[in-house]
Image 1 (cartoon, rainbow, N blue to C red):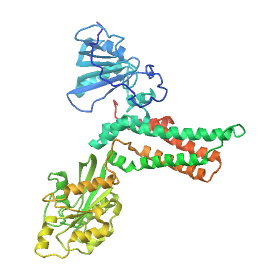
Image 2: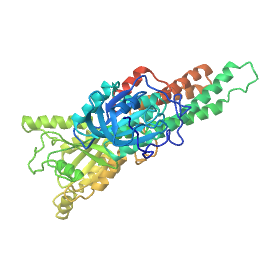
Image 3: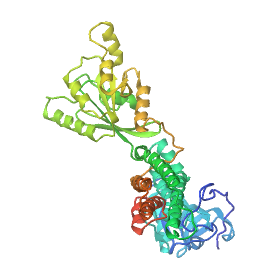
Image 4: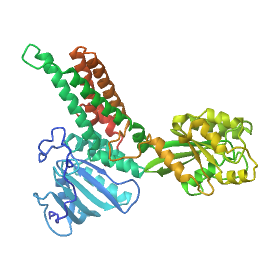
Length: 502
């Protein structure tokens, strides 16, 4: 008995999204572009769960399921239907034995993730049942998919470009709401659209210059050097603005390593607990309590922050404590951001001067802690001048913040200052394109350098062919981001980072 799929809802959106042009030969969105074979993989996370999805894509995916799936009612798959969802059982045709109870979802080309026929078997989530269904599909002619091969086929078949393909892996790996929003914006074509505009502008300039060079003896208008300089300046400015998002993109992708440093007993562990809003680190009045780094992940304004609580920096102490101090110094040197904590209720000393002198102002925030004790000490006149004033004179008011890790005073201001440094003072605007990977950052930088060389040459009225060569280099660099310019090695490198089944 052959299965028939029961009508199901059209659950996939049109592709490409509105306003984003299809790429790589996808001019005919109804054209079927097949892979050479049918691939299969488990698409859900490893380990037991409620549901496990076995996904197939390729020319024989539907035929395999017609043979290995028995619907609860009905007899055949309807060839004219784009989507179908059917309840039944996965059955081994050679023995007639039921393998698992499942839902069968069929998405026919080209309206599927890969633009091939795609079939998903939604089985029980136990590892044994998933393996049994997977082995059956392989035995019936499917091949085990390589990491990222479904998304690779989506790219090669023109459904998405290379920047959008990278965003799929970023969505899976997103660890914060900001990272998810930025990756979704890239999947929707935000970065691709921006790069496409810049690339078309450069191609237009290249064509204009080459016409004046190749047909200099013909009746063509001479090159307008002023317009060329103006347009190249605009392109370089746009690339520079895009490149400024690189740190934010890396922060969203990898998180911001943030070291909490200071002398013993200034309240570093208390500050860690206060920011996390839970007791993570041991807090004690005894100096040297923290002897190793304590790391935790939190989110500030949608940005993942890796907080690293370090041992108090001081001379002396036993060997174990000194090892902890060495790790503190190393953490401070390697961190993207440093929170240097000082005790506002204690006198200033030479150790404070040394710590302030070792800070990088561009990536440091001075945190004056114990502001509640400082007020009481000033009222009783047991300390000298307001220590916060002394702190502000070293790095400037923008980098100084007074808090109380015990009462919570000033913590919102500290969070705001952290976000301000990470975003370069421009705020978190994830509606705008963000460079999300090292590959994208390097290529945009390469394009900007080539555009800059072309601009300098155009300003000097240098040889047009040399200017063309620089512009061509910028065009090629941008094309490698979205996939217009690619090699097999590049594809292997990118998609090898994906998980199986994606």
